[in-house]
Length: 248
Image (cartoon, rainbow, N blue to C red; front, side):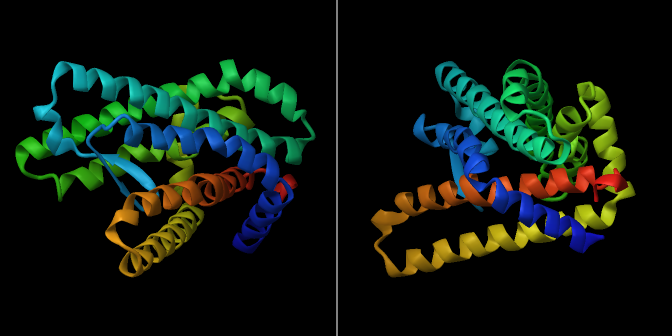
């Protein structure tokens, strides 16, 4: 069964690579925004992360800039993920990509954005509380994982089954455990791919001058946004669709 899902994922990605890559451009822009507006973030594993330890030192103006950039970033990433799901849905069910994209701009994307925003707020609260308690290294990863699980398959649930946001989150949480082997497979593949990308970047950094670090970071972000992340979203969607045995 895992072989079928991987086969479907590679086939779907390669068959629709141009469309998927095009729809992934907003994700690249979204992940790039925090770096461009000089927010307290760092780049790792092809993504951008907020330095929560710097939050107490921010001014009101700085916080406003971070908030606006975060909202724009989340919406663009949501838009990209939704459209990749739409491409896979169209391939599997014969629906029109154009009609679904138009529908998704106001429907699917907004719902995914709301879920991601709530999840981001929860993660931020967890980071700040655990930082205050001095338990950031121990509790934060566990609590963050619990927040992430309802969001894992939620975009696929919203697009494929057209579920309500809360129902998609609930279904995602249950499906992680009912198909835990596939969830573990996705984690393993994503870890290997992102680690290899980061390793390549580190090796390049040892060869080229330090001045090229930012260019290298942007290159890693570009590859992650336009190649790795789209494939991982396709794999997520194919795992979700696998519950319909008739489509396997």
